[in-house]
Structures are given as structure tokens and as C-alpha cells.
Length: 222
Length: 222
DNA sequence: ACTCAAGTGGACATCTTGTCCGTTTGCAAT
DNA sequence: ATTGCAAACGGACAAGATGTCCACTTGAGT
Image (cartoon, rainbow over all chains, first blue to last red; front, side, top):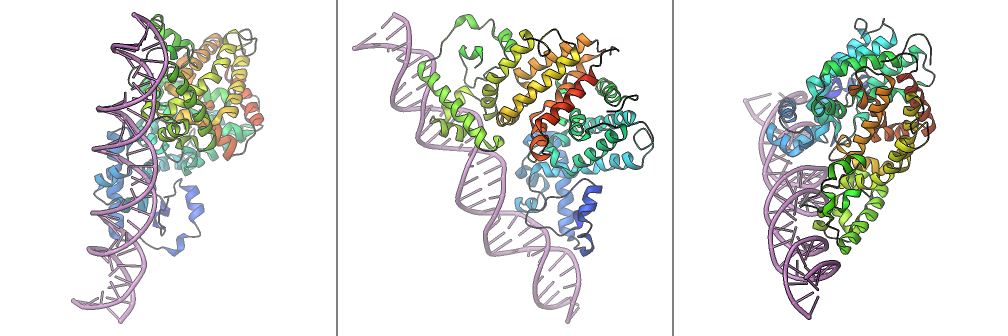
């Protein structure tokens, strides 16, 4: 769960995600420490548990606020108190899993963490994200609906990471390339390749690895 | 409009799009030639005209079947007779504009058409698609909702084209790379880069050009 | 002119959304 | 323990969207 979930919340609070980014943004608000009531905490857990099951069971795009509330055994208004829409529930769930990878990118051993050439780090990042998508595709798809993936804190984190790699490699104008480099990781695209085309994770992974190396080839800069 | 719009239609006919692909699939049904009634044709025109305006005026994701029907001055059931959901209306509109580009890719002069190296053709394709996105972004965004872009006939056409380029360049396992190479053209991504990051079309275009050349560099095969 | 299938559009039942507001409940101060 | 109060809860409501049904209208062959 996000650290900033301890903050007091307004009428329709959007749970902030994205780890480091969220920490920085909420830093000045944290000391107030308005801790959540026990029943609220319990309900939140029920909501997340029920939602994770729902997203896995049916088409993640058809999960509705009403059904989440019913499945969690809470009223609709209670659910709205914590989340503005179904996708933000999925985002909150995904956030837990993404946090580990975020740590590995910064502090972990190469090639995922610092120390390896940019091209190798990008390739390793692709493989790690593929693994994440394979294991949590329903959540990733559920997080797409409503406010797009570009708005999530996690996406902001991936952007910062990829930008670092591009700059380290000496790319001339890195900014437009950031999101281009991230676009092959779209959950919707993964679903298509994986379940409509029937490609294996390994095959996609090999292509992405070659893709990453080609994109950030050692030798020339730009 | 699609050639296959002359076909007879069932209860909730999905207008097929995508030119060549559509033609091939409908080939055996065409000779029946059950031509449409005049009032149906008139309504269809009204629907498309009104819808194009609606998609441009408001957030394309919020355009509803009810509003399209109201704006076109027809009943809801009449609208459902031709299109199953709002996104398929957008797809039909987009299809007209994409058809010209499809022709140029096959019969036009290089670098868009045959004759240029694969990398240059891919770069030219990217630029042409960017131009299309810039001019018809609302429609492209409207076409995303509901059945995803991967299901449209047009996307199938782009896949065939890119696959041709990859094979011509001698890529070992082209199939997983097809959709990876197409992923930077996601309308949602374009909207983000263009209107949230504030990048110019030219800047995105330069990045994509470099990207295409790097991806299909002359010299090595794979 | 006549016939009939194709086409039309109002209406209906269902579902979802977001918010309001009276009631309940946790927690801390007494 | 008791009590007071803000936080939390959840039933209910109005608005709006969806997909389908069906009685009526209309275009186009005979």
C-alpha cells in the first residue's frame, strides 16, 4: 500500500501511487499523522481483497464500483470514500507489486540496477515488466480504464528511469523517446500479443531484448 | 466508406473496415448485392456527419450512442442498426482517411511506397501516421474505446505492412516485433506527448525517424 | 396501385454513477 | 466507565446510458 494512505482524506480522495514520487509529494503533509480509524482500515482491506478477486475473475474492464462494493460487503458511498473509480482500485493493488521492481531499479544489482550499460539495463527492465504483466495482467488492464496509465505515479517512475538510461547513453533529444521506449509495455498490447496472437512470454522477451540493445547500441551516441 | 458497406446487414452489423482485409473476407458475399434503401443511406450520412462533429467537440471517450442519435436526428434503434457502439462509428470515419495512406504504402512513390530501404519506409510510415493522428486525433481516440484498436481492420493492414518491412530487412523473428514497432503510434500515447507534455509534431517525428532507422539499420540482418 | 420486407423510432427494463443525509461507531478526554 | 464528537458507514435517489422490442412507416419491385 502507499505510504501516503495515512493522510486524512477529502470527499473523494485519489490514493496516490508511485512510491518515491508519492513520498516526495506528500512529505510536507505527513507530520500531521491523522491516522485512520480501525473500521476504515478493515473496510479498505476487504475492498482490496474483493477487488483483486473480481478483476481476476471477469473482464477487468467490466468491473464496476457497484460490484466491488457488493463483493466487499460495504456500501457504495464507503467505497467512493477511498476510490473515485474502479481503475484506481486496480492501481492501488498494482502499486504494491510495482514497488519492489522500483526498488530494484535504483538499488538492486545490475543489469536491472546501476552498473550495467544502458542498453542492458533497458533490456532487463523490459523483461522485469513483462514478468509483472504476465503475473498481474488483469490488474494492469483494470488500471487502464478511466484515467489513463500515463497519469499514474508508477508510469511517472518508469519515465524517470528510462530518461536516465537515455541520457546516460547520450541520446540527443531524450524526451520524445521516453514514452516511445515505454510504449511496447502497454498492458493492452501485451494482452493482444499474448492471448490473441498466442506468443509466448519468452518470444516477446527475446524481441524486446534485441529491441532494447538496438535502441541503445554501444558505439555511437544519439 | 468501406466497400463492404453494401452488404446486407444483420441485427447489429459491425461495419468492416481495413480495405484489403475487409475485401478479402467479404469477397464471397459481395455478388449478392443487396443494395441499401435510400432513406437508410441518408440516415447513415446524417449519423456520420453528426458523429464527426460530436467527437471533435467533446471528449471523444464520452460520446454516447444516445447523443449521436439525438445529434443525427434519428432514433436509437436506427443507430444501433448500423453501429454496435460509438467507437465503431469513429472507426468508420477514420477508415476513410486511412484508406488513402493505405494506397500510398502499396502503390505510391518511395520512401512511403516500395523502392526505398526498409528503415526509410518505416520512418516515412511513422511520419504519415503522425500526420494522420494530428489531423484526426479525436476520431482516433474515439475509436479506441470499446473493442480495442487491435481488432480494427486498419490495424491489421498496418501489421501486414510492417511485417513486410521487417521481413525485407531480414529480421529473424518478425512477429513479436510487429506490434512493438506499431506501439509508438497509439493515439492515447500521441495525445499524451502532444497535449500533456506539449511536444511538437516535428519533435516527435524526428525521434520516430531516428527510432525507425535504428530499428532497421542497414548493414546487419536480424 | 399494391405488397411486403426493410427501415424507423418511441418506449421499456436494467444497470451504473455520484451524491446526499440520517445513523452508527471508534476513540479519546473526562 | 461514561460521554461527546467527528469520522465512517450505507441505504436511497435522481440522472443518464444501454440494448432490445414492437408497432408503425416507407421505399422499391411487381
